[in-house]
Image (cartoon, rainbow, N blue to C red; front, side, top):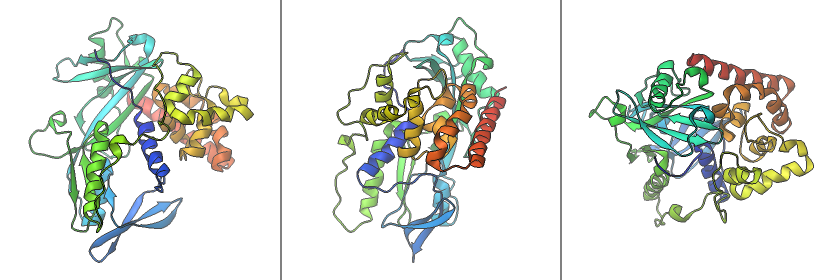
Length: 372
């Protein structure tokens, strides 16, 4: 058993971006890099795609922090993919809390394997993970397979009285770790989680490896390397003492299985909880549940598209909230209502709104089919 902190990775990374914006950065979402701009042998920016148009962004230093895609970015600079990353897939599953009934987090052994997995309470659900397997497929959408789910359920069933099956799973998700490729071991679990920072001959700073829990140290090292390429004095990193956006003056609420609306919003938004709550003053319907059975308010979807760069229905239901992870089928049932809510702010036509709903439901159906 252990007592630690909870972190919603999607909200954490989003808040890091918003913290940068509050400090003066310009940030953009859904903007793929197409070309790195060069002046002679020096990279001086990038051409990105914004709503179908190419936009050139100029910079004195370019930092490549693209995770498992970092080799693809390096290929734009170096002319070939260096194959430095060995992607390792990890999946989690969500189960109804009453099926597990764990008040605290636990670490449990996997039968027949020298690994452990986490069992973590999260509101009315419990999530279990993670796996650690080599991955060779497309990076954009790694699948959760029946074998992956069975691996986690076997560990869980080894310590619970109620034997759980794939039919009890209400959500699944997969991610890829950008591990550094070495010849030391074929097992991804044996590869180092350390990070490296390198600088190409054209000046591109690339940070690879590492993990989310050490992101501030990784960022400080990458920024230090970027300063080394500038003709100005290096400034000490402020990250150790820099609070995230919305975190100034906030005491974390006490975790509870059924938190109040105030605790729920404060835990997710910090001081911005007041902005979310204010949306319900003129429109009381925004205080209604976004997805029945989950704690999210309809106001949170409106806030997501107005302040958090949500551009799609999947952005709202999978990342700005975790509805898809916590209640996959219920989120699909609510998709039409959520799309109708956010459509005016996003300027969607009726056809685009319906297309967003269809795409989301198709993705949920495919996810369900993967593990059946």
